[in-house]
Image (cartoon, rainbow, N blue to C red; front, side, top):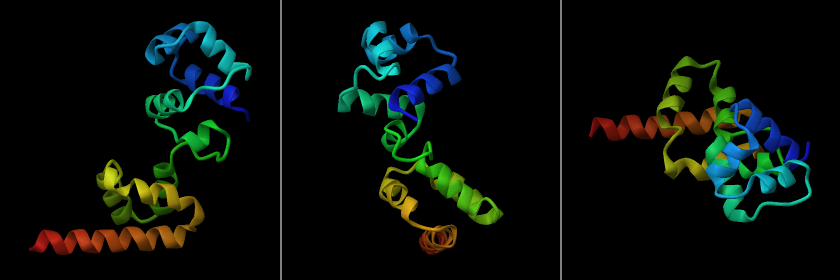
Length: 129
C-alpha cells in the first residue's frame, strides 16, 4: 500500500474531508489530494504532523510496516498476560520508552514480555523505596 493510499484510509477513518485535514496540517486541499494520489510527497515536518495526528508511526505512513503504532505491537505481545497488559497500558505514553517502541519490530512476543517484566520489576523496586 502506498503513502497516499494509507493517508486516504486514515483520513476517512477519522471522518475528515481533504479540506479538514488540510486545515489541520496548514496546507491546501489540493496538496492533500496530491498526496493521496501519490503525485506529491510530504516533507519531514508534515510527515511528523501526520504521524502525531493519526497516532501512527512514520514507518507505517511510508509503508515500511503494517503496524500502525509500535505500542500496538507491544500490546498484542502482552495481551494474554493481564498483569503485563495492565502495566503496559499505564506506561505506554512515556516518552522515555520511545526507543523501546522503535526496537520492538525486531523482537518476538517472548522477548517483548521479558522486557516489560524487567521494566515492571524496576518500577516495583523503585516504588518500595
